[in-house]
Amino acid sequence: MPRPPPQSSSYPLYSTILHHRSSKSLSGAIPLAGVHDALSAKIFAHHGAPALFLSGFGVSASLLGIPDAGMTNLVEMEMMTRHVHSAVRSSGAPPPLIVDGDTGYGGASNMLRTISTLSRAGAAAISIEDQMFPKKCTIAAGSKIQIVAREEACERVRGAIGARDLHYEQHQQQEQIITNEPCGKGTWIVARTDCRMAYGFDEVIERCLRFEELGAEVIYAENLQSVDEYQQLRDRLDSRTVTMIAQVQESINLNNNDDDDDGTNDVGKKKPLLTLQEIAELGYDLALFGVTPLQCVVGALDATAKQFLGRNKDDDDDTSTTGIITEPISMAAFSDVKRVVGFAELERFESDFPCT
Image 1: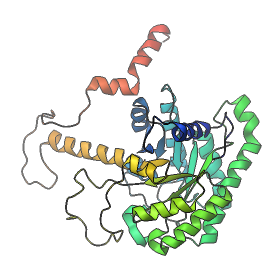
Image 2: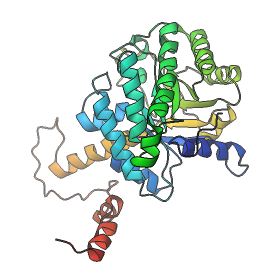
Image 3: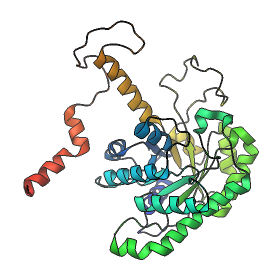
Image 4: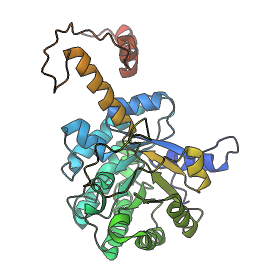
């Protein structure tokens, strides 16, 4: 695990992983919540999240209300990265932020702009994947996603690392001395492959070994199909390499029937979730739950809307409603909402500096 410069945006992520690996009192992999906006990031930071992941799926859903299918762009991801980075900086120990960089949004020039832009916005690490454009959520699409050839995937990773290094060489002086923005040097590259369902597990191994050889700091294979596959991959990689597992929790009741499965998703049957301890025992450092916060938000808003409006969308009954939530629901008190967004700090400032 290479040591980034102490002034770089990735140094807190490096320190978190190093501390976790060396501490005998900590058990389990590092939990990585997939946040989708500044508010969700601020809540997780308030509760001591060791690191955060800005999910492209989550940004597509929360910012635009559309599927994760290549329709968001770099401008939108940069904006959300800046918002999230700014929101968590107010916490005592701001968690480092890993940002979903999709495919790099194009060719070499796009890759250069993607890495430099997200680095300046506050990303500690940026993930780059090997799908063809327009990309889709792998878990949702299964084998229907399209994957670039291995050499092209490697060129993307090599280009991302080169863009990171060039960004620092060109901008370290103004970033450190003039603007005091996060330094781009040392921004980690998360090399991700989505090729499991399209090309098989052997190709996953080959791509990950090449990504590691190229110098990617984090290796991330999406949607492997068994614990044994995760173990085989980890065993083939250098023990010093940082690795990540991503999981999607289908629902709270993991034993329910797949009544909503129409047969179009050939990812396979639901796999049991691995605990943080089990992930660590496999040798992985980061345990990503990329859409869990979004799932909880959607569930809470859906239940609230039904109560608030007094009916379900598909109901014919126009039940009268008072607009007041009365049934048990995960609803924050208004005072808690004010606390989370920082009203107390604002009121103290206004009291100290009563300018008009």
